[in-house]
Amino acid sequence: MKISLKNLLVTAVIIITAFAAGYLNSLFYEETSFLKYGSHLEGDAAVNKDDEANAAVKEWTAEVSYRIFRGITIKNLTEVQKCLETGTATLIDVRSRESFAEGSIPGAVNVPVVNRNPYKFIEEVKNKLTTDEVILFCDGIGCDESINAANLLKSMSDIKNISVFPGGYNQWL
Image 1 (cartoon, one colour):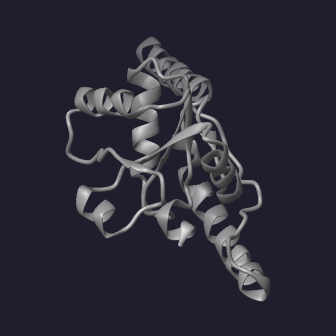
Image 2: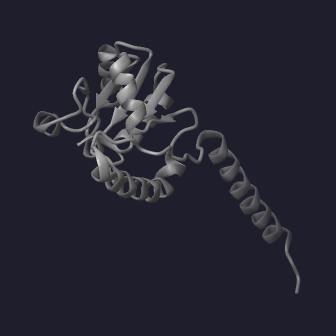
């Protein structure tokens, strides 16, 4: 069997491209893991809700963690509650205005991300920032809007301290 120079070069290019893609992916993205989620419920209800939330969040994280840019922090419920109590972060609900009007985390401001010009989204986020840290959230598990918004801010703005609360509004309830 003869191997032509052309086939050898094509194979080399494919291998180099695959390696480069993997290397670039490792530069920009990172695996994330979640700390134990807290709960505002009492007793057995809190334990059951925590167990269910942890299992669901871990499963969801395994599916989307490869899409989170390096440098974006993941916040759990307890951490978000602490940031709200101390006023150390601006909490931004990236869901639609209609969803926000139906209910949101107390103290959050609404900056919808879906179907928006990215520059207008970034400008509105900057205008609503009252702290150095921004925490983005959406509906929660299965909703990628906050991750997409965080990646957008990380890649296109000068905002440095970006976090995502993946449990979102549904976990807050």
